[in-house]
Image (cartoon, helix red, strand yellow):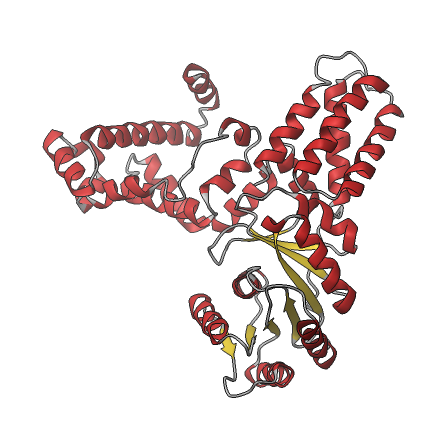
Length: 442
């Protein structure tokens, strides 16, 4: 996410490191590189210029604190200004109606239908709502089929009427069905086109007037950069939408759309899509995104994701097993499953401060645990519960059954034993031992 922008901003801000004080010359030199980095990320020229001018005024008007180096001060100023540019605070979705009606808009290919499913899944699991998906794309039968597949996948009902070619009538009928079925949120997936045209705008405008939704959301492919911002403006002029959804942020995103869109349409980014899975949806937090763009990671979001997958009862059982030296590979496997539910590995690693820079250029496979799972599944139940019984002949059989080598099996056993020792130390209050162990590993 924003790897190129992060790298270029890091180089730009590196100019001030080692300087004893901020001067007009070194600030100008730094901000020239910052502006260039923003333009390369497809940020609108006017926005990039205003951004760097604001940072310059604040930098030259500040007395550098004794505890803060000029480089650190500039990073803070850039981070604060990026946060402000992207909206300042996270914005909640309006769920005040009964049912709450959410109208999804956007171009074809922006990920609108998939995100409708993600949003329904989010509202169902995190907001304890009962959503209904309504298929209003009357031009593409495949779009209706896709929404039904998504609905089945997440356990959410989908309302459609293949014999009706009037999207306004379908939307109204969908809302009526939601009321009779006890659904308290209706998400209406509308038709998109390959480009903004008058017919599409008239149609979405007519649906909007007829149903008067609590939320009108514009879904945009973040990989399209400045084009996304221009399309958002065209839609906003007609719909006056309430918020933006940025999809495909896990791809090769330059970052221009995320940084520019709020200042162009004056509407907040409410959600972001970070992967293909139905769980890959996050509330957009401008300050956290600014941290990630500047390579500072996003520990808060990482902890939140971990807490969502945290099973208190399971944790207690594992603690007891660790205390009795009975922690086995089945328990290890359950921990891996919880980590996988948190999201794709590259996205998770990017949330760790400094990791993005350290991992630059590395291709982190989303199936990073695949060979580990294969090895564990090739063990017998007895071997999984008692790893100490794994002798040479058993390892050879496991390697053959999992399509791996004996060296890989040995490596997993070594990692498993190290992790078991660390967990035992942490549980036994061995903080000092843990610190010594970590120091020795450096």
